[in-house]
Length: 454
Image 1 (cartoon, rainbow, N blue to C red):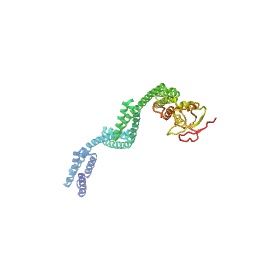
Image 2 (cartoon, rainbow, N blue to C red; image 1 turned 90 degrees about the vertical axis):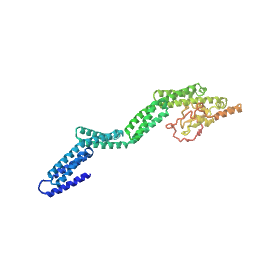
Image 3 (cartoon, helix red, strand yellow; image 1 turned 120 degrees about the horizontal axis):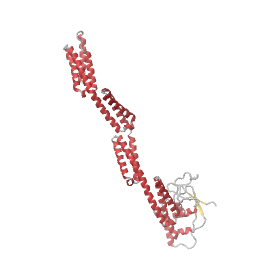
Image 4 (cartoon, rainbow, N blue to C red; image 1 turned 135 degrees about the vertical axis):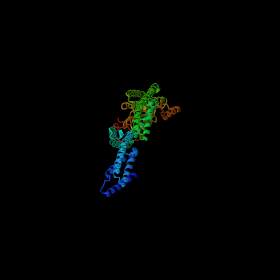
């Protein structure tokens, strides 16, 4: 900069001197101006970096013309200006190809960083323009149009940087994709994917971790590639686990139903046993058709019904005590109970019998009395009116204290898992839509008892 100011000052001095001379040989003002312009042009292409010797010589020659003019050596001054111009031009021509090359390398690096940020997907318009500008730069360089190559490379670099910034602004897209895969992996693990699909689950977990690390490092392209692999493997692991879990549940349900069929309770709960076998058959069919979720639900229902058969076995043992009295009780007397809809504690024949008789195992009496309206003891609907047989003790010989103790113990006994009927057995349809009567049904646990019309 000091040299440039010094040169400019010299030119001003020379112009003033030229005006003072008047006639005689003219001062080479034009040649000196052209030399100064060419030096500036060389500086614009970084000649101070790529051709420092040539640029320095051009500046030195131009400054030397000042002393020559002062010594009235105008012809030598003119030649000095021409030599300065030539050296500046040499510096320019040497520097321009090198500058174009380096600028193209910078643009190429920026394109690579934009590509890593997945700009080809997230900022496609800018990224494609950057690629087009970079191609123009390459073509111009090959044609030795170095200035055009330099300008195109500058444009490519600017567009590439802009595309990268735009892509990085959409990091949330990758973050959401990673979270989605994590959710699928979690569901697969719940379905025992570590047993049913260990390799795919491992690949999914490792790839999703890599995607997360790439996100943290702003390498979005790498992150999107990794999350794509993770998603594919997570989905496959989930399906494998779902199929495997369905098969496991089906096997467990098959064993439970077979066990129930061989139990003593089968004689007391023939309908439940039949329903469990039907659910098992439907579960097997759904599994074979690839409807694994449905199959798992049906297997669970089959197991629940099979468990109720075991519960009926204990109820049957009460024949030595209180239930015998009930079975021999009054004939043809009924009350009416309207089924309640209470999401927190579902109404079912088991609970109704518990409330009406104090013994939930007497639900079969209610079921038998309502065969005409209850086709499946596991399916009663809110608002449905059912008959409650009035059970009165059999007149005759009083019970012994031992019989009373047995009966009271049985009545108070709670159903145990796998041996007694489950808590909600038989079940109630949890969706009252379409079947719930228009009247408002109170949500309490005590049923309305009204006389049955004759």
